[in-house]
Each structure stands twice: as C-alpha cells, then as structure tokens.
Length: 440
Image (tube, rainbow, N blue to C red):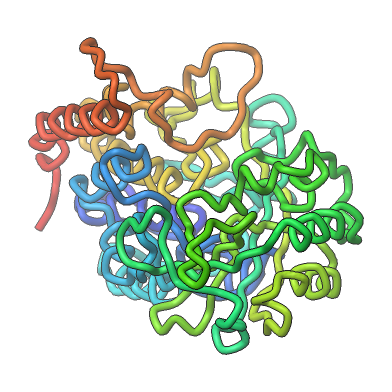
C-alpha cells in the first residue's frame, strides 16, 4: 500500500505542504483542530487564516519578500495562487481580502481527491510520515511531546495584531488617500497629526492600560511586530521613525509633509474595512478606542476587531532540524511554519512548500532538493538549520541572509534586483527536478 502522510495543522504551512504532496500523487490526511477548538488568535473555521495583517509585504523584485513570493509562484504554490486571485490594492505591497483568501484555499484543499481532512485536536506526534505545522500557538499535550522530542522547552516570544476599523467611520476630512512617494496607486488612507497631536498621542500610549499577559517584557517582543505602546515607551520619536513615518506622504490639502502619519490599508476587496498599518497592540479594548480616538481621522472609528497579543512559540531548530526542515535522526518527521523559527506568512508558506516537495521525493526514493543559499527558499532553510551563534531568533526573509553576488553593485535597488534575478535563474535550473515527480 502507498504510504499516507499526516499533516498536522491547516494554516499556511500545513495547507501548502498538503497541496504539494497531493499534486505529486501522495495521499494526505490533514488534521486540523478548528472549528472544534479555536486559539485566542483565530476567528474563523477556514484554512490558512491570516490572524494579523492582511499584507504579504513587498511585491517587487527589489524586495526580499517580493523575491520569495515569485519563487513560490514558480514552484506551484497554492498559497500564492490564492493570494494573487484575492489581492486588494496596497501600493507596492501584496495584500489580500483575508476571508476570500482563506475560502479559496479551504475549497481547493477540501476538493482534492487525495486529501482527507480530519477535525480535532492532535496530542501525540503521529507515527509514520508526518509534517507538523501546528503554528506558534502550539500548546498543551502536543507542545509537551515536542519538548520531549527535542530534549527541552521551546523558546517563545510575543506577537501582536493591529485593529481593523470600518471605512464608513473614518473622518476623511482629516485624512487623504496616498501611497508613499506616489508609488503605485493611492491605496492607503493617511491620517496626519501635527506635533502637538503626536506628542499627546505618544504620552497617552505610554500610560494606557494593557491587557494582562503572563511574563510579558519589552525584550520578549518580536522586533518586527512590536506593539505601538512598547515603541512609544522607547522614545518620543520612535513611532515617527517607524509606523508613523511621514516621509513621502505629502498632504495634498496643505502641500506640506505632516509631522506624523497613521496609515490605514484595505482589509477586504470591498474596501469596507481598513487595518491600522504597524499598529499591533495589546491595550485593553476601551483603551484602544480612547487612545486611537486621539487620531483626528479616527475620533469616531467603529472597530471590527481590536488589537490582540498572544504568545508565539518556536523550537531551537539549529542542530534539531536539517536544511529540509526534517528532524535529525527521524527522517519521516518534518516541521513547517513558524514553529521552526521562520517568521511571517510567506516564510511559513515557503517552509511548507519545501516540506511537501521533499517528503514526496523521499517517499519515492529520490534525493531531496537542496535550494541554494542564493535563493530566498534556500536562505530561509539554512537560517533555520545552521544559524551561527548561540542565540536563535525568528527571522523574516531579508537580503542579509541571501548569499551576496561576487560583483559589487553600489545602487541598492539595482543590487537587490540583481540578487533576485540570479535567484530566479538558479530556480529555473531546479525546475526539472521539482517537476519530475508531479502527477497529473
């Protein structure tokens, strides 16, 4: 009998892994606890739910996220196919209608004849070929079994999500549409503040009441998803050099650059809901309404979702996982997604894609595909398995972990584009191997 691969978790990584296995003729049992059980971060029963922002970040090849997305497309990624189908305007980024995105993936997964979905919590690590993609909120008995597998407790950090407000409730007399530097179409709503308004806002953030989170410390917050109240406490101008940066956002009503700006990005295709870009928070809900209401355009904002904060856990992958996301010493067991130490939507997708491709190859007696460090896919897998030094932290894709070209190019835009072109050329040389085991 042909082996059946168990994939635990139907998030971005698990959904992608299951899809890559099935399109290669491998039968999959996809085990997902939703909707029977939900975590504090989840709100829907659908697969591949986006729990924080609806943005998959930069779209161009001069950005590392843009390169990774293009690599995923060329590898036949289901997640990227759904993202492109459900995209909403977001300037130079790729953002999606989160409900349509999840629905598209859920329908495709459930309709595939080689994928069987089983609902319910998983406590034990399944026997036989298995990919664990339970995400950074893995807890309970399963988390304990994973701890024992690796001989110690997983590290953890805290992650936060931004609020979503109704478009109809935004005061557009105190806001304007624009994209930074006029790049792309004017997809963002910009809410300007003058110096006095900004300083009052920062002071309110510093002293606002937070929801209790056991063990919370500023140093435990993942730097790429830091709550705004933590940023406010780090210095008067921290927000102005971060999510409230006004550079390139001239107010068309005054012809001047504001002192600070809060940007809002469409969260659905209808543009009825907008999220506060970079405004992850864990303030109490009444405090969010009060403090964010100090932004003139949001004085009467109606909140579809308040910001939340939750613990994200991950294993110390170097020395435990190899470059294929496979457990060292247990070749039939893989891990995928944020639990491995990749950080972000597309990074999780990338790990799931690599696991699915190489698990299928392993079952057929084929050599795994080692994506080179010159590619974004390879750079991520090597970060997880071989990061130097004693400290291992979650990592978004960035050009710093992709192998630099031998030829020095001074212009940053041109240099990054050249890195991306080289990566895509290398990926093309691997395409015959990636497709040799595909089934019609």
